[in-house]
Image (tube, rainbow, N blue to C red; front, top):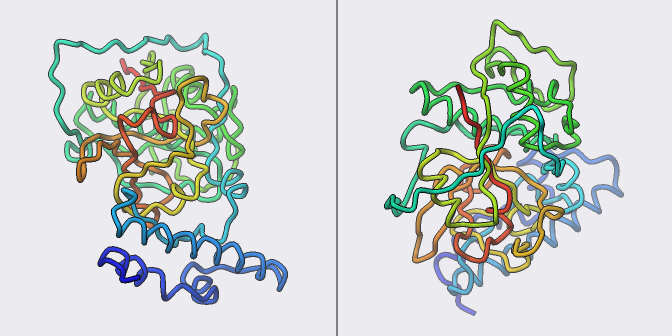
Length: 332
């Protein structure tokens, strides 16, 4: 088989990491003895082969996104689930926080593409580390966006504040839910800045400092019904949106670029809530090479994906459940 240029580029990207020792050196991996090293080598090799096979399909135009080796390529899906996702839906509304169902204005003509980064409403990509705190990063990202739209100032807010202090339905690095995080900020009448309460990626005692408070909120808007049409209107008119997805897929974990679509991901047509496992921030939408996408900010650092972002399939049957549970805070 003669590979296309895209496949050759992908293979060049991974070939130096073919040997697990090279992978270990690049990512600073340290294993506990020969048995674990052999296990990690097998996981890495399986992922390496899968990625190369996928990228050959990408070069042939059979799939719409490419994949790459990254720092998680020696981990199982189960390990990813325990340490890098963390959305645990409480399935309960909060009596402390008013829910306002979002109803789009159908008279509005929505832009064909949106990228809130260009407007200055999105902080740089962050890293939750080996802590199941994605729910806190998603909630804080939405707060940061709303604060910018209200004040014109972009302030990085404290995920660690949420991890340590939001304990109703939330369990820090073990996992949590976005809406109870919003409820905490309301009941606490604020959240600290990142500078004042930096992220450590571990559960710790609550150390909220009133003097470092940035902002609060009074309610939230929910975008329900697994409607990508409603979600598009919300992203265009309200700003960056918190969302939950099925991220426990090899294709998501090793995403590089292009528009991610996975037929094995949940479609969200019935009741997907029990399969949603990761919280993210939708910061825009658009079209690439004829494929509609959602522009999604992840919390796995800049080295993951496309500089920390992923373009996820839009108008493909709510792929990966992206429109199933979306929300955004409303501020004073």
